[in-house]
Amino acid sequence: MTLPGIGEEEAGKIIDGRPYSEKTELLRKKILPSSLLYRIIDKLTINFKAFNEVGKAKEKETFLAEMRSSKTIRTVKTASGLSYQDLKAGHGAKVVNGKKVRVQYTGWLQDGTKFDSSLDRNKPITFTLGKGEVIRGWDEGIQTMRAGGKRRLIIPPVLAYGDKGSGGKIPPKATLVFDVEVLDVEP
Image 1 (cartoon, helix red, strand yellow):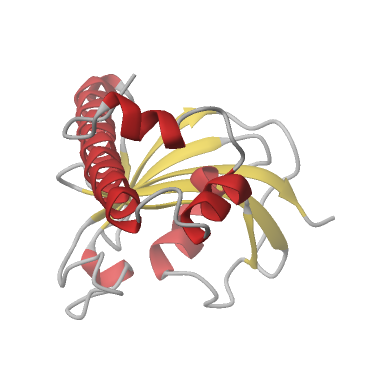
Image 2 (cartoon, helix red, strand yellow):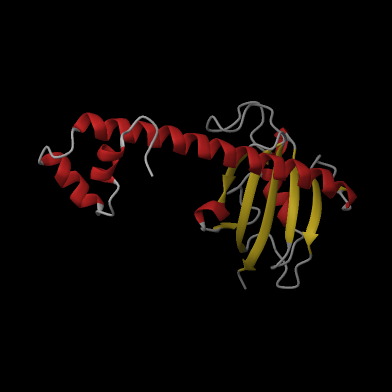
């Protein structure tokens, strides 16, 4: 298999099962021209970027389909403007203000753009509920859950990042959608 624009012989010098350290040794000893290596890196970078964009588009499509199908799930709207849907009932310990909770989450903009996910990092977050360690929409939306429960939070800007947005990923005045699963609650 060769990459577009790279000849069979050139590719054979690189793609022959050698470990990375040996490939860099080939470059250092001038067995492999650096211009060829840079062409390969450029092409791989372009291919990875295209692959990543396809993945993001599929994620967005899946999210929007889930949002359409979740219209049949009972939605609760609070006085503050927060809406939530229980996706899975929890049967563990109750979440209580002042206690530490450990959660997995994924966050999207309303258009389906994913901006963060603890699942992608495989690293849940832990915080003390009601202490302002997370956005207000989380403090309010999680407080009636139980460990093992999963809930979709639809958080208006006033309970999220307001007029400023956050970190370039969340624009000003954005309504945010989070799927949050409570893994456990501090006893």
